[in-house]
Image (cartoon, rainbow, N blue to C red; front, side, top):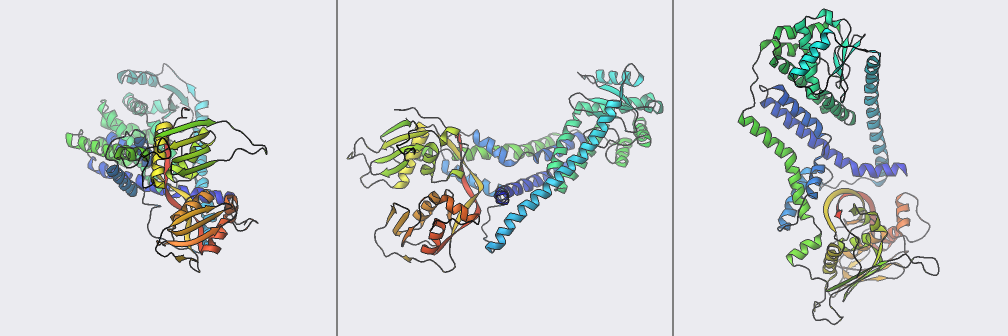
Amino acid sequence: MIPKYLSEMWASFAPELANHLWQSTVFAVAAWLLTLTLRKNPARTRYLLWLAASVKFLIPFSLLIGVGSRLAWPRGGAGAQAEWSFAMQEVSQPFGRTGIAVTVPQASLTGMTHLIPQFLMAAWLCGFVAVLLVWCLRWRRISSVLKGAIQIDEVREVKILRRLEQVRGSRSRIEVRLSRTSLEPGIFGIVRPVLLWPEGISERLSDGQLEAILAHEVRHVRRGDNLTAAMHMLVEAIFWFHPLVWWLGARLVEERERACDEEVLEMGSERQVYAESILKVCEFYVGSPLACVAGVTGADLKKRMVNIMTGNVMRKLDFTRKLLLSAAALLAFALPIGFGLMSGTAGWAQAQAEDATGAAPAYKSVSIKAVKPVTGGNGMEEPTGMMFNRDGFNGRNITLKALVRLAYGVQDDQIAGPPDWAGFGKYDIEARVGDSPVDDARDPGGIGVDKFKLMLQAVLANRFKLTLHKETKQLRVYALVVAEDGPKFQEAKPGPNMVSLERGGGLVNQGATLEPLVEQLSMQLGRAVVDKTGLTGHYDFTLRWTPGEKKSALSEEDGAPSLSSPSILTAVQEQLGLKLEPQTSPMQVFVIDHVEQPTED
């Protein structure tokens, strides 16, 4: 069971991961192009761009689209918005929506689907644990140094630090601790930063050099560099297999140190004195082993010395570059939220959309009553029943989930976000087209099942206050395909068509398409069935199976056929010459945004 569970989880998760990775990669490339445009501007601007590229790995575009969909409001033009939303989904999800079918032998496919997910997940977990373990060991090393350090006050370096804090308007004081290690001066901690100051360094530095080093550390605290470094370390741990995240980490450290250098020089430090102070620290002390413990010797030292000594004047952002950055931010964040708004508006309950266009008639009267759990004389619960008839709809002892399944033609795994009571609370529902069976208001030509479903959607929207939107997710489905020997039924002669269900598990199809068969198979198996037979005609056939075969069908899929015969999987193949194959496919999922328990009549 575990290999099968991993296979299903991987089949659902892999396309989403692939989409997220390529989107984040493109985002990082766009950030790199912007940094090239801003290479003569202050380093803190480029640092923020690299930071945004790092954070993007933690925020999928699908999350932003979901936020937008929940902010949506109903309005006209649902058809055009739905097309626009669908186009956005096609662009944002290139993986898992391909139109090319690849045929793989079933035995080979089963082995691959069981082996690949286990191997990939084990490889990712090993890498994740290894990265965390290395960082934990380094953190523990620095933490032990901090515990052995001595707090110092009223000495030369502390007085200079307090003066710098006062000049920069710092609200909290940085604690200074003297350590007896060869580690460079560095800021430890995020909420309560502590400056680890190596013993003996003050004797090697002049007052100007000492002030420059301390000013550098103050800038790290003011900028919150330890927090942002820790965020990127999380990105590196999760996406350790992606080389881009490690390259991003190097760019973040490079621009972080350069930004601090520029700000220290802006505070009035002399260039030569500042450069000499950094070189002296590098001569006697080793760099910090963690990016989230900001020191003074990080990044490419040669480039830093060149930038400090050449005195290149960094141009402030002009109007054009500010406009460019604003447009980039709008495209990166506001655009997905905007698409979510449109998709959410287009994805309101279909009954609401149909009601707005006047495409479906409405029930003249609807009665809803809550049903208390009652068991019969044999200890079994009262039976459940739903039926469309000429007068409307009758439902007995039915749940909200059952109503949604019927109204939207979906299965349980295509309904997301229902409250707990949706699967347990039961109701008796009677919806009538007219006030009496012979009411002239009823459609004289008869109302088809599709219109009855739209009317039932309107009941859900009005009485249950149901609102929902649609998303596309990878789900486990059954593909209905033609077996090797071909179909065992013939096309029907022109004439009326009729579909009827038999008690005991049977379907009689006379002159109809395969659509009723697909719907009935989905209901029996509790999982969506996708018609991939390519048969589009009208056919005559009869299918009979043992009732209650959902458990049996699933057990056959697991490789342990049920002893009862024929199961619905077997019956489809032996009687119709068709075959049901378990696959994964992008399917429409209805996400419930809001629903309420109805008031009784």
